[in-house]
Image (tube, rainbow, N blue to C red; front, side):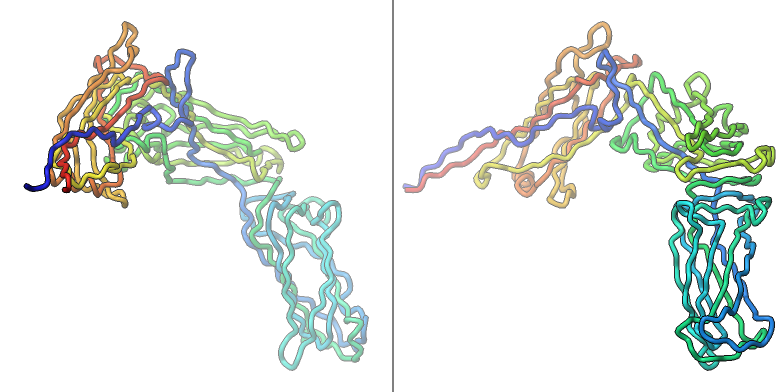
Amino acid sequence: MGNPSWDTDVLAPLVKTTFTINNIIPDSLLHKNPDNSLNIVYNTNLYSFSTLTVPDTTIDTVYFYPFQLIVDSCDLIIPLLTNEDHFNVRTVQLTTVTIHSGKMQLAVENKTRKILDIHYRIPSATLSGNPFDVIVSVPAKTGNNSGVLSTTFDLSGYRFDLTGKNGTKVNTLVTSISAKVNCSDFSKDTVFPFADNIKVSNSFIDMVPQYAKGYFGNTITNITDSTDFSLFRHIIGGTINLEDVNIGLNIENTIGADARMTIDDLSSVNSRTGSKVSLLNSVIGSPINITRSVDNNGIVSPSSYNVSLAPLNSNIKQFIENFPDKLSYKLQYEFNPLGNVSGNNDFIYYDKLLKTSLNMTIPLSLVANNLVMADTVGFTMNANTTNVNSGNLYLYFENGFPFNAQAQLYLMNSNSTIIDSLVSVPNTISASSLDINYVCIGKKETKLTIWVDENMLNKLRSAKKMYIKIKFNTANQPNYLKIYSFYEMKVKVVGDFNYSVRKNN
């Protein structure tokens, strides 16, 4: 007589998860109202604009001795000379600049046969009230090769007065220099006029102002760009019809210069579908005049311009219902459109710019059509399934949303690659019942049964994850339904497997 055997059925829970509105919209973007209904609150910057840049500037000066002279150690070879040097900042007329970051490279070429001490000062550049003041030693000429020194100084925190010697100019730096023979160089030598000279180059590099004052010129800048829009990154399909959308377009000017801005285009772009919706509103294409901010000893009072974009004055609903992942725009900025009306009293601070932003409040009251949200959960066949003959997977849904739904389940390997699907549509997960105010009453239970053959069992054994995708349609259409913070859907997957059990003698 052979070994006895018999069949038995075993129920095994495999997956348990809960869907909430956070599977579609991050919790940080949701605002709960007193009645537990939800608003989306989302802010994004379009563009931040600074009017002032200081290009790298190199100032070269060659110093000649006017007549032949025999020099000894410690002799003065160039008496104190004061110069006015000019920054190349084009149409900008600066009177004062405080440096946030930047450096000066001082390079000296010595064509004399003496070691020289160069005393270099910038009286108009001060740090804590002390002018920039350095002494550097430059090697002597050797043969036909000039003596060369190059060194770099950090200018962070320095305040530059750019009004020149008499305080009446702009973009003008006062520098002074003197040179003498190094006292350790005891050899007497002859300095020849014009042939023996000293070339000094001071290069201002990567200069970023912490504060600047003057006249910033009449400038026009055109900008075509885009910014990421992450609000709907969890939505992978479907459409919605929102009951209301309110977006504030805000332009804040913390620069001490008048501005004129024109928004030539502002569009929502859905890269997944290729759909683009351009905003329609009177603000598009119309110049917006923005007054300058006011500086009260470092406390800046900005000026601002605000416009409300609502369904009654724009296509803002269609703009948002496009599920954009990018916002593209074409902007034009003009500064000082009326010229130098401030009398060289424009100002700018490093961290106070002109920025354009969108501030959104979207009540979650909507009609959803085939709106898809998804989640990936861990999965494993916990029990020993070697002797499984066949079985069913039971999918239990407790739906607390006002949505009818369809479910699709996919098996995934450890690399999150889908290897097969478990549920084929159509199937229906019933929406929760609604009260007279269209608020869900409890949860509606739905059970789906999936037959599992031997081939599918092998895939279940190798699967490491399960990808659950649920497609929603709001009940009671075409009525708008509010989404409340307590809405959720519980999903449970249970295996009902038939085992063959053999007993060894």
